[in-house]
Length: 255
Ligand code: NAD
Image (cartoon, rainbow, N blue to C red; front, top):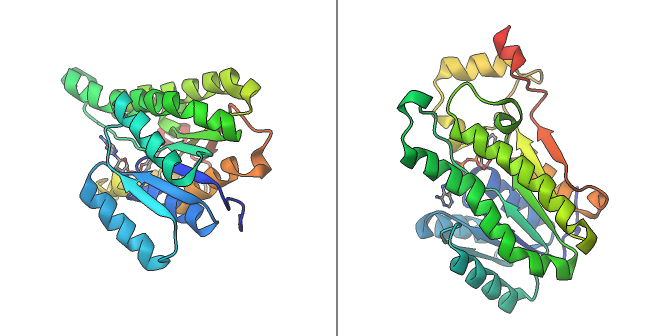
């Protein structure tokens, strides 16, 4: 679909060892990019790297496990990527986490854990990438969520932080359009990954039944949208929040 579109391009993806991020890593590599993917733990990164090398030993791919909120770590990472491959064209802020605890039981530490990863890490990783992206007229793609658009019946920090991601995307798009840097986000609906694997079967069925397309999304559905937003086909798209959700609307849940 995007054959050779990303040849010579360098892509950095957080949360790349599994789920949506791993599908994006595979997609960009298959279409010619060099990819640095970030993982929470070194072991999971190494395992994902081995799986990618099995698909194609010639893939130009590296992995790192850093604290995404650490400003020094972000700066070091980008220096290392540029020392290796000379440039950065695409940053995908994809790592994210959920906490479904009911408001009255929610601890401050739970709020911080979700908002730090989902929101502060987007700020930190974008801040130190932007000078490199200005040079390549590159782009940022953030993974938001439909929960950030419509709210969520379970948990407050997740929808709050994802709404912030949408607002940050639109704000960064304004700021950097004059520099030729595009900033967009994707709001996935319900996607079949580790994040949704713990849903009880009855909940999977009742949510699935409310999705007009009658299925959960697959990680590749979201990865394809990421590649579209990173591609030259989206060269006039910035500040967008692209919902990739099979038509999911929470009002359906209330019927
Ligand atoms: P996932 O749980 O499989 O992946 C989450 C990724 O984030 C993993 O790679 C994990 O290693 C990384 N991560 C988690 N905590 C981290 C930390 N503290 N530091 C660094 N990395 C950390 O789930 P996924 O569905 O692939 O999620 C990817 C993105 O998509 C997230 O931002 C998530 O909020 C978003 N999203 C998912 C769904 C869904 O239904 N699965 C829906 C909407 C949005």
